[in-house]
Length: 113
Length: 153
Image (cartoon, rainbow over all chains, first blue to last red):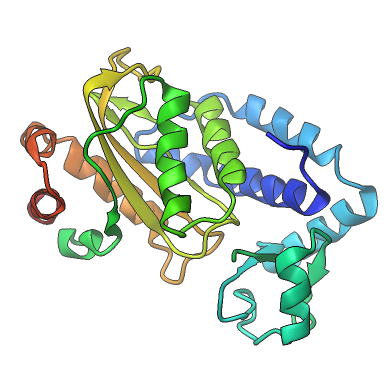
């Protein structure tokens, strides 16, 4: 697996956060989910690889919106606030690996196409 | 959620009745790659990592030859379910220690419109708990036959 850029690290962090958040529901459905501590340790390790200002920004957005990063589909709409993104932003977002925020709601954007 | 509604989350392009994988890692990779091949997912590495982390938490091999690897990922925009079958069975570290033959991979976005992810997961467990459904799924060779089992589940 290639070394992740900061955006990919953030995406992996959010994926882990969502998993941790739903552990009790998944257990209730009868799934095995006993090693929560290993997951929280993995979360800490992952978070330590992200720069402090970016991690702070992620945590703040998470408190405000529950999901700090939102996917962007082909229609170039932020799936957080459903505002259409400028074409110029999309062409950068599709190819660039830097962290881009929605100009409308401030969430971090992750292009899926 | 009723069974008919559940069938709308399946897609023939994600129906894999003859998996080639012989190990758990290969299995997860083969199914995730299919999601990428049919353009439901862009980044297989991120999704594979999420699924492997889920297995660290506890095996999604729920016994009786069934595995339901699942999770939310920022790399998805819609809920999608892939079905894979292995006639020979694949070692999966299941709760009963037995290999898995029927695999349902459920990928969900960070937030889904009607919060269907957990009800879908619950419905799948309910359907697969019935031995008659498991037997029928083992013999379903076509997507239509498969959907018929799920819809009557």
